[in-house]
Length: 179
Image (cartoon, rainbow, N blue to C red; front, top):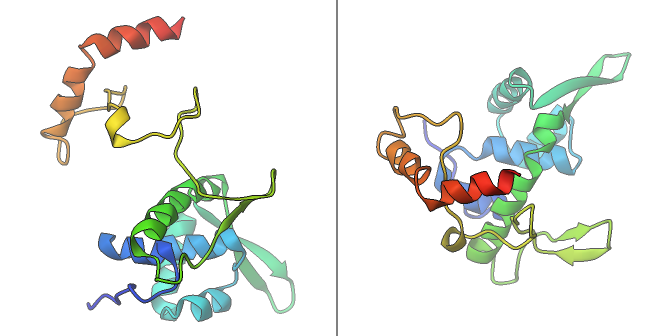
């Protein structure tokens, strides 16, 4: 099956996810979270085949990311609404959008901006530490083992690397901070 390139779509999320295989799920969630919730509108906006859209939506409902809610009784019509699990994808999409804005925006600039309604400012989303509010980067963070970590497919090298970090001075710092 030939995949449709998304490099010309006027959306930083589309351009960024073009590198990661199938982007339709991210774009469906983008639309639903911004307010396009009906099947025909999603199909029209995305230019996606009805068959592919139906399959992606069914999977999102099956996974508990979306629900179908009736908005009209006769004839029966439903729309897709993000669950709590689905709404929690929003920061992920914002992070992807920020990255896409930096590296893939058209010369005219990013195709969309984000306003923080609480303060009224147009903002650039950042991933920040929940304790000190400083932005998190690869240069100032360390992956430590978590309770569900294990070695297996996809973590044969990474698992032991991260596990070894749990036995260094960082582990002592974590234990001290628990008090």
